[in-house]
Length: 409
Ligand code: 5CA
Ligand code: ZN
Image 1 (spheres, rainbow, N blue to C red):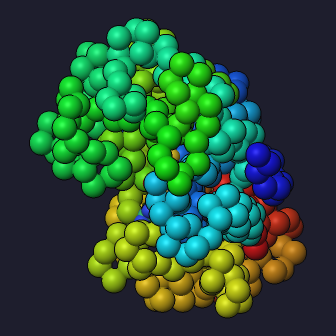
Image 2 (image 1 turned 180 degrees about the horizontal axis):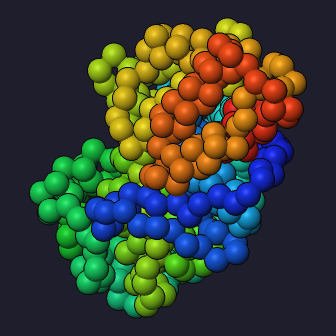
């Protein structure tokens, strides 16, 4: 499917730094040194509701990863999916008496608008689960032929025991895995499974639900994890640089994806690095479509909030922290935007070469966007207080803030 338009990324003088980032699978920092084309897969939305601040925060983190890479003069091959058929989407459509395809199309269209407004760089390949089905079926058949998948009442399950390295992404113990599996789309209680954690690869057609031809699997629809594996293998191949998503995807989604891919190909790793963003909460609880405690990007935009202020509100938090969305967060971001815009509104000012290096350094240090904002704050305060005579300095600040932070001043 089509993605959304790219905002231009200004080129900056000098060169950016290699990104050192926290990797979930090792629990430590890794300095990423991709080739000339960096490869990243970021899990996309399940389009049954509008983009909330939690989604936006997660996509902001991975947009920063790309901006750091682009600043090192690398190209970026970015792939994202849309889970445009899955239980929550079908349930929501059913509840509202809506057509599930219309719901998915409407919410995906709104997501594109939100991403464009927030200046998130678009993926090169934006792929829906439904369009990926012809590629998913042979992968499930192959897993079955390898003895890594089995049938249960027509459904096909992946056997986690077929992967000796199972557990290496999230490094959780069996009990923690079982709890999270039940919470996040798994069915550990279903009788007849070889291991309670085994995830579904292919669900046999259910009455009243959409289904597709699954060749030797029979008609049905794909499981969740194999969707992202099929799309990533098709467009990036094994050993891509980063798989990203919110921390709620580390287990089971990214764990299972890694297992599926490693058993399928006999190679390791699926992704070289697993990067997870913290959860954004509202009123003390994780913002989630199922709980309904949501602040939507589109609602703020329709209330006249400047998308650049929304972006600054996201950037004010370290991507790995769990944080709370409040009106105060947005108010502070709006004030900061005003101060920055005033500071760059003159043609000359305080030299800014050192500021560009400070922003680069902050982002290369595990995407420390709060430190990057603090550096710009200091420049803006001094520029407003004393000014300077360096011609073009405010322009350089504008370009750096745009290129590295995605904020248009
Ligand atoms: N379609 C799947 C991924 S393949 C999915 O998780 N969709 S989602 O719509 O539920 O979430 C989209 C992305 O936003 C995921 O990376 C998820 O981890 C992230 N996310 C969801 N809720 C929050 C939240 N409250 N805070 C931060 N990130 C969140
Ligand atoms: Zn995914």
